[in-house]
Image (cartoon, rainbow, N blue to C red):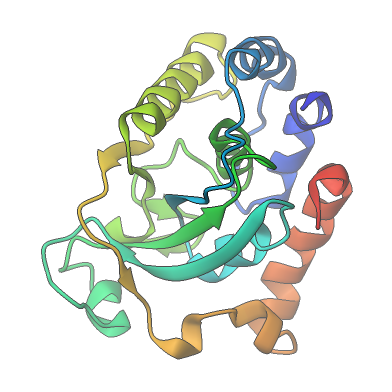
Length: 219
């Protein structure tokens, strides 16, 4: 975990519009937090749901982590059942673009996933990530159990108390009520469309920087 904490300030350079982060403050706070967690070794997989802007980018990053078995892009947080991409993009459904991460807690903890989550987007901008504007791009954690809620809220509080960001973290932390898998063409998007302009100009540079920082956590 040490390499993740000391590199936190570097990883923020990869996201469009991200503020500089105080990596030293996060290092001391989060090392304490991680030491209090124990990885689950019962062999069961767990899930986590995060929204951090365009799900193509977030999916591509979380797919790289050792211990992550599957990443699915989808929608959550709104009232409409089985929404379409166009409906979510309108901003009228209340849903956010999210990823559902299926992971092995024996290999990677939920706190480590949070470390990555807060390191790959700007959690201080409300309903916006770079040029993507709207509630569908909000920073959000949809927790699936009480432990996830506890760790997410504690982590967020420590980030704000430490002054890790120049502005307060505004990430929404809410219970997961439903997750709707996005259309097939959104799944595994970067791996199947790597030559598309968005992938080569936006996602690939983020992945390259991410791998330099989190190299010891890659598959």
